[in-house]
Image (cartoon, rainbow, N blue to C red; front, top):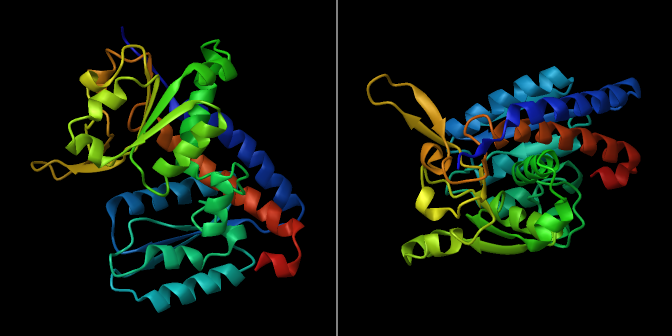
Length: 306
């Protein structure tokens, strides 16, 4: 068996056209729409993501404001910056890039976000709504993974509901921004769901869990973690890993996934590559959430906006 390689760039192009049309409608109505990204430190993956968002936002007519703070920035400085962005009417969506330096309390930082501008659903109000199946916004990476899967099922002629009802989805990784929301989105589709993390690997039971999966969603942050021996034949594998690797000879950095693509492609039914799989869709989805936030803010009262 050789897997179908899911073309995320093609899916992103279709989504991009939809978001561009929505952004034009907001602009025609005089509704401000803009995204602000906040990074603390100099993480490679964060810098790369900010660069892509700037490009995609420009293509879709959504303004982008990049806030780059030094690694030793204090909690108070971050709080003040977020207060300014919350009050900025030109900003409809705010994204705080992970990882944050260890001296910053991540949960407290997220609580400083205006829930209406929290386009990644990290504020406790939005995280709670997501867990209850009533999300204000769907976090861009897990939402994109399931958008990709839904679209592929349609193209393959599968009945979505029937597929999910009979399938086991195993999510590898329990991060607050990807792994946990992915579990919620799998629940929403009424699939059987398992969530595993590093303890499954340390206990020598990683393969025991993953080999039973009809759909394997991998967001562990470990390059090449999943190999063919971890995958049931005919499974669908969604690789969400983004791991920068620098060639010691050339000094060039490239991004690889959490799945050993060349090994797993011979066993899976379908697989997303890295790069070119879930990532391009995630970039557009984040802008889509920014557009949705602008629409929500415009529809709310001034009091609710803050």
